[in-house]
Length: 68
Image 1 (cartoon, rainbow, N blue to C red):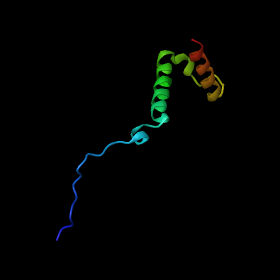
Image 2: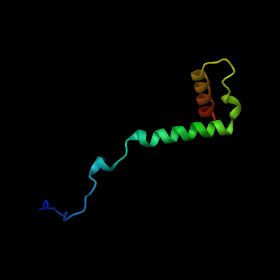
Image 3: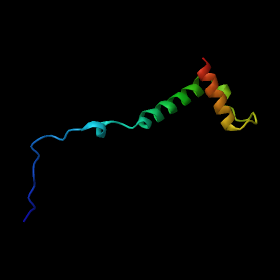
Image 4: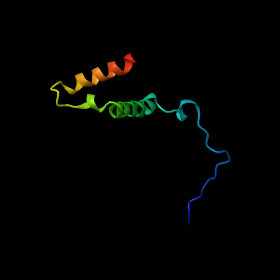
C-alpha cells in the first residue's frame, strides 16, 4: 500500500526577501574578479620578493586602484 500524495494547486512563489541574494553573494565574486583583473593588467606589482608584507602590498594596490 502506498502513501497518499498531494498535488499542489498553485505553483510555489517566492515571497519578499526569500528570493533575494544576500549582499555578499554578489560582492565576493566582484571582489575576486577585480583582484584578478588588477593582477593581469599590472603583474609587476604582484611580486612578493620585495620584502614587504603581503597585506601592505594589498593596501597599496587598493589605493592605486581607487586613486584612478
